[in-house]
Image 1 (cartoon, rainbow, N blue to C red):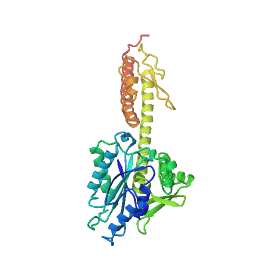
Image 2: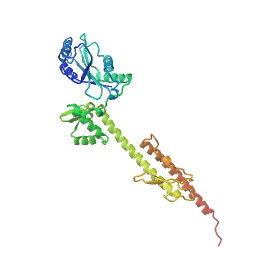
Image 3: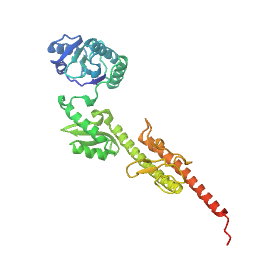
Length: 360
């Protein structure tokens, strides 16, 4: 369940929008459905109780996941909407609840008067924060699914400026995973006809916001999607750069471990083929692919043990965790083989020195 706060400037336009052909009135109080003109006049009459309030129109849409479509009866939607209003402090005032039937996901619209029945003002302070908390609480209470994501919105039904906003959303979503910094993102979006502009802190060069524009419309990153605010995108690029550096360090350590292993294996067993030496049985090899290629495994009866199973990626192990583990493993085995090779050379040297000399 997701609630969307919608700006409305007039009751005539808002009521006229929610009362459409594919709709059903769920509930109303203080207004007389279904005539749009009569309901509009009812709302306007009550605003006279508080003429100082500049905008008395309250308009919120509540959207539910298509997975809740079967159980989302009119009665349940009305009950949820009424509890939503209660928790939001939208009480003792006129309201209209209308269910729309033109989308695959269930949703309804709430139109209410911010001038209460006694002339009091229905506060909209921190309304977006309160809306998110209430929606989350009701989703948990009623066991609802998350509302449809932006990916499931039917683009062909959108009108401006939402049409352009979703075009920008789709473009950023598509480009972002291939961008390592702001310059990359600017370049890729420019190819799609989207311009990027920054907001600065006072007269300094410190960036604090980002705006995207196309087709004559401009939106802040957060208006496109909360994940596209300047701070979150900047954090994404910082993490991407750190991840790239981290992976480069992992790759460097892994290649060094491969080199150490090859060198130690050659010193101990005399070749890179993995064929049995000194009567030892061949344990085979493992192929890492690419420019690394095949690595021979120590013979089965070698004192230095390393199996192909130890080098395989474990279930649930990330690529980074896998590389870190086998790098440490290869370094440990290479060190053991180097020690074994030195010990063998020492024994051969001792045997040569202690060998009796032949008399002439």
